[in-house]
Amino acid sequence: MKSPISILLLTAPVALGAPPEAIQRVTLDERVVIAVPVATNRVTTISFPGPITAIDAVGVTADGKTPGQFQLAHTKGSSFVSVRALSRKAATNLNIRWNKRSCL
Image (cartoon, rainbow, N blue to C red):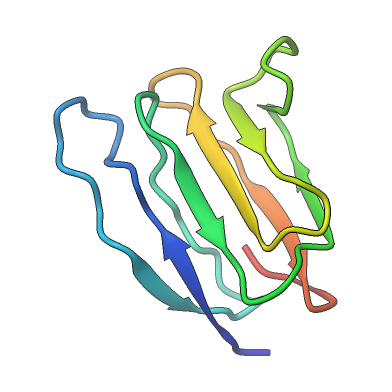
């Protein structure tokens, strides 16, 4: 499955003071991993053409009280997710289900 999506990158790589990235359009291919830069001082929003059905990740917290490397915000039924790194050099994978496929 290949479908265009918009990835809104309002972040820069973790280096502070770097200029924010522009909006990028990516073609979804469930066989390709998409790397998304996320910073500690900015929020990165990833938008899909329709509602996200599931999100799976390790080291990610939604409430900020649970330990994690990233903080994630998503409202069930919405077509976007927002992520912020909680520590420098943090890394994880985020599996997002959209249109009955894993996309990211």
